[in-house]
Length: 360
Image (cartoon, rainbow, N blue to C red; front, side, top):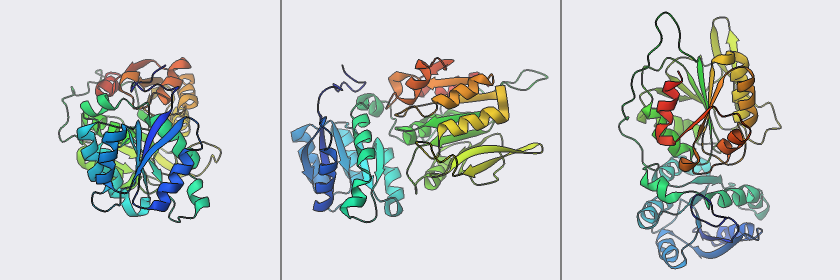
């Protein structure tokens, strides 16, 4: 059986590890070697070394640090994508390289694993399960389509979308759009959100799975590329039409009514979710607050976050859109919703903005 990238999911995934630290190369190799389905075929100390080895070894996935001599991670990713688009998982320290991680996403990186600031073996091994999961998912990313479709490029202009039309004498069909997205999300949102019309008359709230240290800067950069106002959600932010609130890493995003207003509420609870922020928590809160006037959108990402939340939305009479398999970097979260019978319709990434507009 083959995945969307053409990689046989039942065969060994070949991985090239790139890091300027010999110790980190050794530890990452050990972590990946825990899986019988992963073979570390080579290691490189910088981008130039990695380019030569990638051409020689033809890896299925590359793990890459960003701070390296000779050729840093961002330059390497850009050059590798121009030669042979390959799924790349970044392993980096958030506090030191947040801007460079976002640049790496723009260049075509698929996902990021946050490297502990301390390099003790026990702290590095804490991220082993996350690394294994993301490398396996990256192996199935449809890189040729992703790169050819400019998913890695930052949009500079918005594609024309017809202005929203509301029936005379009445409101539109939704009071909130909530979006859940994970692997491939930074690129996907930067392609989709600028396509939404600036006169959109509903608020938008987003849960994007990213490690701590990235969401504020990501929201700022997305705001620069988008006609809508985009910001990282803060406690008490009023939920307003034409404003996109992105849940901060490490906090769930929920809604609270205060008289005629609805405001954002950030919370550590529930504590037992696989992700914080959780798409399920956002969707459930939207369903409880806005009822049948909720439009939920589940986009690319691994796992099933969003499935339970979609069930809440449907139970309240709301509607659910899913991203089509053909455009997903990882068809996990949308698949879970579709297979549970909770999706009203699917649309490709390129058509998702129009699909949202049509349902408003």
